[in-house]
Length: 172
Image 1: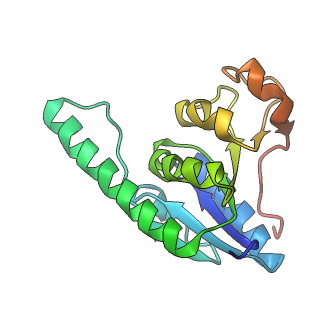
Image 2: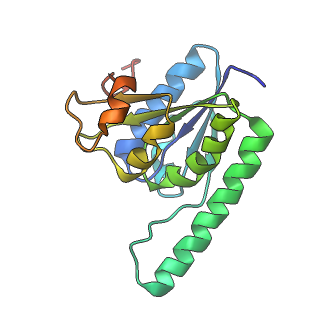
């Protein structure tokens, strides 16, 4: 296992993807390997990323019944894509920048964390913690926040939370 392998999970909007790209580029410039997991929607914000990009299937579940069935199929596809990549590459550090697109990879990574293969870090950009970050916060090694008062952050997770702000493009 290469302890210098980083995986960044993100997706959806530029609000999630752009800080992830900035942080990933910073890691790469420090000499580490970094891969970015992103969904199809978030891919449009990755053109400045200097590392490997892996597009995975993802979807919301907030649709009518036929839409929910299609969403579940897409999520299952993303789950298997995540398993294949993660078993093959086994990143030691994973930083998730939230969005529904990070759910399936994080689900797989929780098992990796249980066996000591991976450390999970969450970054919450918003003042209200997102649903996926809320769900996986108990499994995170550390949680990085943009705001000192982040709503919906469980008291049990506050000891492992740090205010770090938003990663920006340090080259500008």
